[in-house]
Image (cartoon, rainbow, N blue to C red; front, side, top):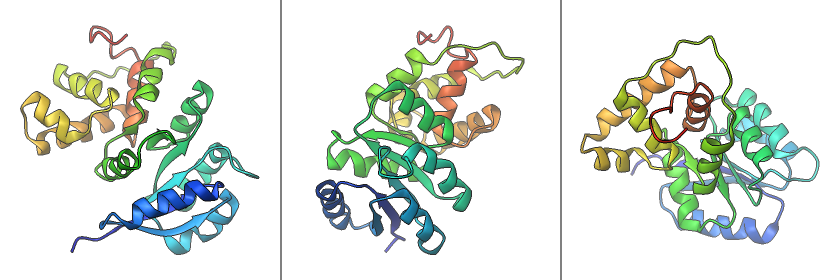
Length: 217
């Protein structure tokens, strides 16, 4: 049996917590190690539980999810954070991604989509609601930069597909190349852009104007 993915849920609505718990309990490779209603309580137990994934609501009593993201990353740098919220406001999306969230999903997503999102992030991909991905591409302003970053046509093509919400396997199928080849390209893209996750890569590439000519600018 493969190691289970350990998940911490930070959510202040009991009914929604119960729905997520039921979905995770019924997924063999996922293990819900803890649930909390506030970010403060979750942070106190973070080092002890060491989850692989934190599913984090943004609008919590006390410390907000946005303010909690850098604290989670500081306390557990190997833990990936997926925002799970009702908010599709531009301000919240861009703040969460800039703070280092590896995914951004809306609570209107199906439970299967949330589970798929967890698997996607654990595989090194971005778990983005389609509307959120579009927002990143359409609304993040281009800014002048002295950075001279160049990506090959193939890498830009892969990055554009990531921005559309595709996972590595889907990209491999669409481009008719192997999964391992896509994985290698993605690692090269992250290194070139000096980022750690897919949302940050998409955000930075757009800000640098790398998508010009890709039909996405």
